Amino acid sequence: MLDFLGNLKRTHYCGALRASDEGRDAIVMGWVHRRRDLGNLLFLDVRDRTGIVQVVFNKETQPKAHAKAEQARSEFVVAVEGKVIRRQKPNPELATGEVELVATKLHILNNAKTPPFPIEDEINAAEETRLRFRYLDLRRPKPHHNLALRHAVILEIRKVMDEMGFIEVETPMLTRSTPEGARDYLVPSRVHHGQFYALPQSPQIFKQILMIGGLDRYFQIVKCFRDEDLRADRQPEFTQLDLEMSFPRQEDVFHVIENVMVRACAVAGIKAEAPFPHMLYKDVIRKYGSDKPDLRLGMELHEVTHCFPEEAKQKLQIEGNVFALAAPGAASYSRKQLDQLTEKAKSLSARGAYFVKVAAEGTTSTVEKLIGADNVKKLAAACGTKTGDLVVAVSAKEQIKGSEAAALIAGQLRLHLGEALGVIDKSLPAQAGQWKFLWITGFPLFEWSETDKTWVSAQHPFTGIVDEDLDKLESAPWEVRSKGYDLVLNGYELGSGSIRIHRQDIQERLFKALGLTEEQLRHRFGFFLDALTYGTPPHGGIALGIDRVVMLLAGEKSIREVIAFAKTTAAQDLMADSPSQVDPAQLDELGISIKQKKKAAE
Image (cartoon, rainbow, N blue to C red; front, side):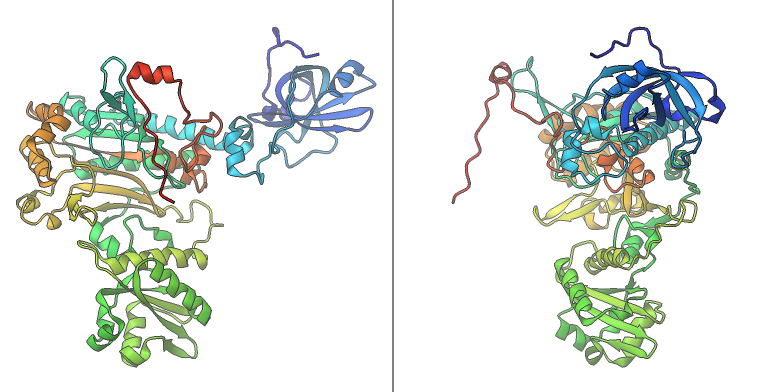
């Protein structure tokens, strides 16, 4: 027979009881975590979000409570009345380990089926099972910790934004479809037959309009939606800190975000030091082979094309530049390991991989016969090698317009080797220089689209243009630099932003450079272009991925671990069974019919 809660009121959280509470009457409420029956003594570990407390039921002194406790099982919901006493043998594994609650009365408020996995910190259940039974998974300590950390980080962000004079403004969830780099999620309108809203990929246009409206400093913790392929740190719906400022210099935006990140890191017990270093995009590609480099690895790239004579280039079919890095301690790699590394490089579109071993007994190379002993030494010296290092050099099979193809391949090998060699000491505390922030600036405004065979916008089409490059917009778009910037941490892009285009004439020039006709401009951006004609101030901003920030601060590898109700990599909510089919009557009301996909030819 289950009990009613009635007027019973909790006096203490389970994990809050301490030795200082000895002798107090207490009422705790939660779930039965574990049950141990020793005959006259029966123990229930009762758990809530704060932790666990041991409750003892004595058959001789409290026979009714003891009898009731015999009915309790794992995950039953209970309320316990009793007195706090010191334990004869403290349990150092529990925060409440110095005390226990001697029960005088037990209320069983609900029963429970046996859960599909134990409600423990570390479990072996498949992620699909955890997501399907997310309401049980959320009872575990780790998800509790992650969501509490997320709350604390967002609360701290709101505090620091308020202190810096920003106003939080909500922007619409139902808006119009605009090209911003990914597919929109579309929402059909019942009232306006045949027309659709789009869920925002970002509040980009609205926050710029807020600057036109004189808000001066805007921010929002906002949900955004992109219908794109997923991975560990991507979801179809995600949360970002979105902000915009009027009359800013690039450094002003940096200062705001550095304040935010220093304070957010402090919430997680991590010391971040501002100002963060800066690098130009072209330099970061040549030095690390990535636009989101993990600075903890070291292993910088070096252009070593000069170490390969023309005759050797012809025999090795090398076009473009050659980039190399020194892998610490990898001179001991076997022939098999070098072959595997070569295959890895080729899978990344390398023409070839060339190795130099710097061992105590001498320097050897797989390409010494082709480039000569002197060039082997030059190659090792160019990478700053020391005894025990392995030089890995690569060339690219195909060149990429406006980029260093070989550097990008070497950058991927750098990450692969960094992981394989355990270059990062993950046992070091957070304060030991393991949080490497970096601002990247000087991005190209356009990138080459191999699919469309044309230059397309590298970011969104509202990104500002470096003033002295404006004259190249139509004649040499590949040379035009943007006023964009990214914030990177430990190999992850945390956020991206820019100083915006605030003049209508420049905005229209950019749209036309992207191949948009006047009719397309008016259809997609007419209201925004009109707004630009009414005295738009210079403005700029940035958006930080909150999910990704919290993921890193929590030490997780997937943002699904810091989202209460996450979706799978197939964009499914297994718990709610979403997406799902809807009643045909709903589709009829919207004037929508489902077109069946054609089966692939067998």
